[in-house]
Image (cartoon, rainbow, N blue to C red; front, side, top):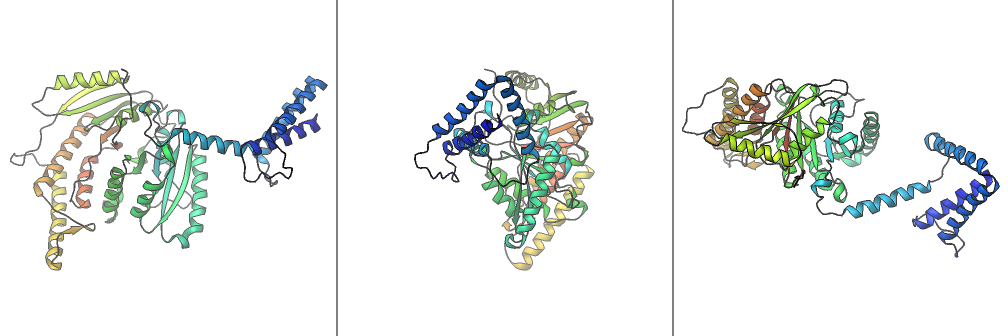
Length: 457
């Protein structure tokens, strides 16, 4: 029986290698054909059943156990596996069948590109923030889907190549330990901005390119006085917009729950701009996780004070019904900013205005001293103080609404405002700090120019 199984295995290996055109398959017998090997393998199995069907079943079961054990534990042999060629060809054909065209929203899957260490440092034996791995799993339904974990090393590639390989192995082992279906990559670049720009352009194949960038909000930039973070943060957002990638910024990552911390309450969405339904889809994916399955979704829609709130509420309810999503719809009235109006001031807004004005004075003094146009972050800037006040007022009002309506929410999702043109990145960080202030756990989301959900009709 076992001799016949050995002959069948050799014939099956020859059949696979010849059928899949493996480069290493070079038989000396020029008349060889894959059909002969397949016929030999089938003939061995048939002869086994003709001898004794009971011993054949026992032999096949035993050899399957041995194969499984060797595939897990056997590392001494220096031989290849014919099935690996089959997996490669299957993956290649599947990738080609996906094509390079846009995937229909019904078949859309999130492929998050997770930046492991964008701000600050982690312990040497922890290549990725553990809560980032938990959050990446929350973006996949039943854990199915691909995640790409990327870390950027500052330096020269020729000098840091070995360090990058070791770091990649550590990151891959860590994501496997955290039970993430993922691929680990380490990029060496002179700066984080350069590394991210290279990753966003080249990572992935065909329709298996990442479509969502996940980063941590840089809460440490003011506390540790890291003045280079605003420029890097704004550069990452602008690169995502240009590359048509969605972006999810996680604020309060340290407070993100693990798999044993069940959450209660609501998942609140502040739907400010059209994002292709990404925020709605993320909220539904969160509900599929055990830690959030007791939560309910609430959708907050901002409306002008003189607009018809009931009509807007009915339209949003109809839209959610067509999307087959259950959520409570709440319309909030927000007074639009008017530079001629007398708007109430807040301590946070006054503090932000003071910091922006002092930064603006520094830029103006440097401009007068150098006799050149006003620049920041390597580009010319034009500061409109009324526009700055408008951004501060809008983010302040939205933050006040979130604190008033969603103080007990499990997660708050809000639309990401794009960085204003010709504004220094320092100003944008002040706007963002004002938006996320005192909100313990927030996802700041920006979609891209396509739908990710489908209507019922």
